[in-house]
Image 1 (cartoon, rainbow, N blue to C red):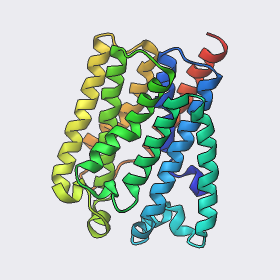
Image 2 (image 1 turned 90 degrees about the horizontal axis):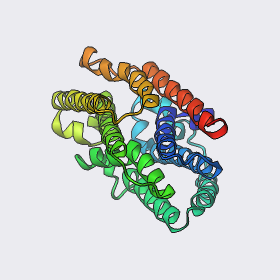
Image 3 (image 1 turned 90 degrees about the vertical axis):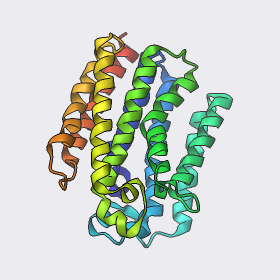
Image 4 (image 1 turned 180 degrees about the horizontal axis):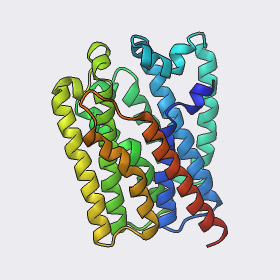
Length: 280
């Protein structure tokens, strides 16, 4: 059970950090938005759990991926038990988003549709080349920022444009990196952009989009669009980005480096958030 709650911690940590940034930038730190942040984090954990559930039959074919998938290891779980847990979490999320009225209802409905469409048949967007990259780029790291702005009724600024561009590229590169890592397995059990385009082409695209992400962030800093408190995020994430350029083509990403980066970013974000909540 511990594996289920801690699995994909880097993903829901990043979602929490990005959503918190939107709240901080638009000076919307209050108890209502704390509930929102908890709901977004829980929702992303649930989305990745649902993805693992539908991936279980594919992941079982690979020893490494099977160890990481809770549903492969716990094959004895009944559908009724899984359904009750899913329903319970859904009710809690509904209460959290309902405080934002019709906006919350729209966000939750769209979130659940994407959660189902990305992982479950018959759509299973994750196995549709091109669409898999687009949906991941839009809804994994970009979506937490956009829905936070939408729910608090924030006025769009040039800083928001810069952040959305950065997180869109960061989410796109994360998916490309994952597809490179899983290329051999996905050739046998699935179909995605990397298996369609080829491993060499995907690695080249990964490096190009990573460079674009770094350049957009750097340009935003140079023109003064990024406030000083956000600069540590760039420094925290930079080693993992640079590692993509220096490692060997057949060497996977450093899971330890990613975990350290996301956890450090979460700790820094929590410190800034608590400062604004209790001191500022």
